[in-house]
Image (spheres, rainbow, N blue to C red):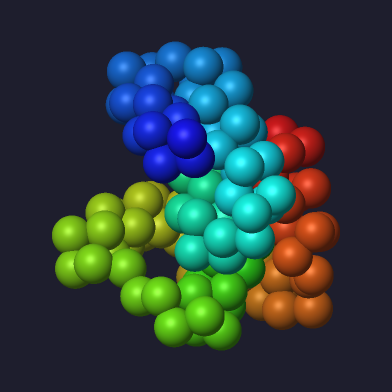
Length: 125
């Protein structure tokens, strides 16, 4: 169920329905958390980051992306080239808004964050 809920969250986001996107993504994240699917959690955190970026909470977006990147490295789960291209495009907009230094400062703040802290950051939006 986590994957279909995640997909519904992405569709809702693309349709501009942030509230529905958050609802679906919360449900997907809860399932991934319960079953310990850290790859699924990384996807959800990236989606929450994307939502934060579009709602002008760019600092939160950068911190979530930073944590998700670290998590992906820990578990050896790289994004596909297409996914990476989309992520790069979204991050470029946030880097432009925060400035390079601000973006990388926010990303680095996730360095000491525990998984549960990152999840709470995503859910607190």
